[in-house]
Length: 253
Ligand code: ATP
Image 1 (cartoon, rainbow, N blue to C red):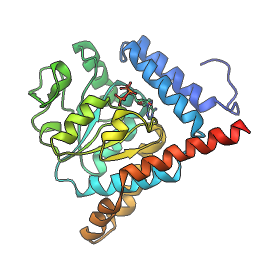
Image 2: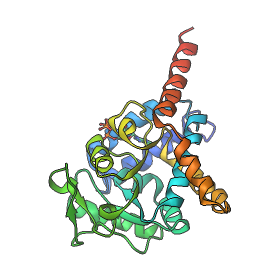
Image 3: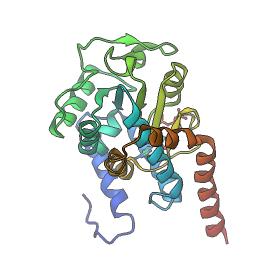
Image 4: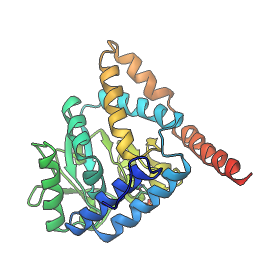
């Protein structure tokens, strides 16, 4: 990447930007994926580029929901694969959960590229590949409605990071517990999901893994259930928005 010293205040952010730009050049990502990343960067900037208390709350609820799930599925798009493939594979192993490729702009080439990224990260079983069976999800049209019969289609809990609003809405309407990771607390995905983690995916997934390892020792299912029951997504999103307001007020003085 550019000649950037590690103590540069935007170092981590610029590293990720480089990773995304390279993935675009390699054909893993569509051009619009870079725009979506930029929107995320802007929100991360005004959240101080660190995990906040509201995100930690959501991470705990998400981890409990994933542990309670009968058929948890991690739904992976291009950006998620580029930014977090290794951690996704780790998360899938410890739960265990299935990994399914779901692309917004699905082309056979890009699906194969994302599959390759996941395999390089250690994934062995991947759903949503070219040629795999699929069923349409009610409420969606075209390639974006695809869901693997053994994956998202029959999942009770789905982790869909960096998702678009329509898909999140359709999954919620089908009665699934939808967990998202989205830096924009105002996005339709953030607003409609069951559990919204307003944090950068590169920080959030390792924290989910840590939390799951902690909660796994939890001997009573009741305790996990009460973590999920007591979590209020609307109120938690409001806390994230409050942090942004505080940031802007501080900077505006
Ligand atoms: P919606 O349809 O939900 O309103 P959108 O149109 O704003 O979404 P998309 O382009 O569909 O956005 O999805 C990208 C979302 O992912 C954005 O909300 C963006 O803030 C978020 N995002 C991008 N990069 C990251 C990241 N690294 N970590 C977490 N969230 C991210």
